[in-house]
Amino acid sequence: MNKNYYAILMAGGVGSRFWPVSTTDFPKQFHDMLGSGDTLIQKTFSRLAKLIPVENILILTNERYNDLVLEQLPMVKQAQVLLEPAMRNTAPCILYASLKIQKENPDAVMVVAPSDHWIEDEGAFTRNLQQCFDFCQNENALMTLGIQPTFPNTGFGYIEYDKRDTNPIKKVNQFREKPDYETAKSFLDSGNFLWNGGIFIWSVKAIIASFEKFQPQMDALFKRGMESYNTPLEQDFINANYALAENVSIDYAVMEKAKNVFVLPATFDWNDLGTWGQLHEKLEKDENNNGIINAKVVMENASNNIVRSDADKIIVIDGLHDYIIVDKEGILLIYPKSKEQDIKRITAMANKL
Image (cartoon, rainbow, N blue to C red; front, side):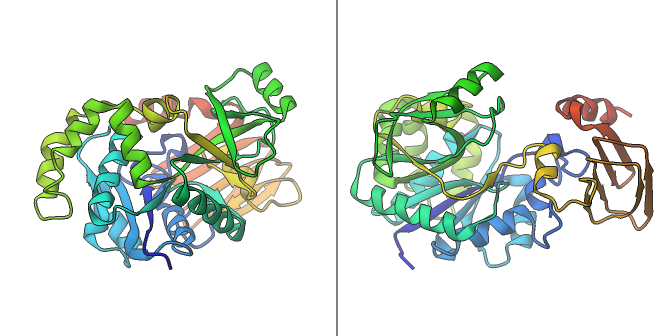
């Protein structure tokens, strides 16, 4: 394996739309959401480890999830787990990890990947990632893997490239914010728009140069800790300074401002598993399109439901269509899939009881 290859695995999110399974204390990346036998973070780690040395994979997470990371990834050492003392979106944590990597290996190229995405064709993912690494080793480039859109999704940002560009790796024209439905339809009809899946590839030199240019205040803040990085003093510096960083995404902080941005249209199936409905798409279904996870179920006159239970009980369902049914530790959720965007609001109400 190439010792210059690194990964930043982002595992700090809460996944509140998957309540009651995903909670603040035990978020979705640490659950086996599809009943595959592995949690999402375990699947993501093993996928990255096919190309990247295990010791070069850093996990960025909130300090409250440290024990969960070490429990689920026993091959990882504590020094590889970067603990955020405050929630500050993706730009600060990426800069922090990049400076650590630069201090250890200034020739590094890295991938930044969320820990909670589902990718079925892992061989295609590895080939795409290798292609990006090869490009970034030789070019001053910020790269992203663009996902081929399958329907006019209004919940994703989009990446636009020049449709006349015949190169496999394409220069990005611009990033587009989450569109309304008609705009999303026009993006698909154009044929030169990809979903922004939040997977980034670059050399450590390229990304740090971009932070210096576009985020000088944040860059100066984290560079004050260079002497402490990769030493026992690192966490003290982070605890004292991390919360001072601006709360901003890598897209807004760097990617939307830079001119040296490229995209490789991905050749693998991808799902960000953002909602119960998206999870339902990836499950095996019965003849009535019901998806069932870890549950013993008797169903009559029921279709298009997703059922999950952690309890040792038989669930009988009759007459329900297009529902989310989740039985989890004292909470029973029976909720229409069409209203799943309201689950965050319902969670807040339930937490007051």
